Image 1 (cartoon, rainbow, N blue to C red):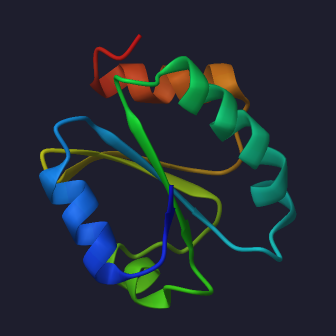
Image 2 (cartoon, rainbow, N blue to C red):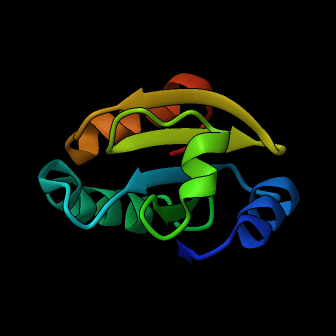
Image 3 (tube, one colour):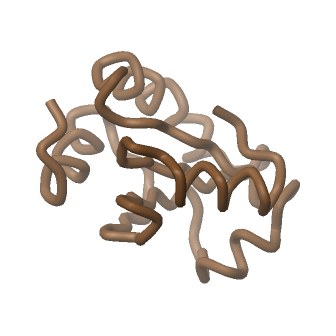
Length: 107
């Protein structure tokens, strides 16, 4: 799910019954382009257990500032509206799953 505004982001993260993995990215970022298909793999594998949201930091810079995203791609994991984990840098799907599983029982 592509998040286009602060309001949508806040509603998604705070009201989701499922944990939310947020991928902060930008269209000019080479590593972001490399990680996009890996994020899609994880989304397919965790459907029903995890929501995945993508935030284009060029379109919604206020969210990047709010969450102090200083490098992209950055992935942040939210549970019950609270950020519980964060990882910067491109990762293959197995590493993304490991990152998620460190804080959640997502399978």
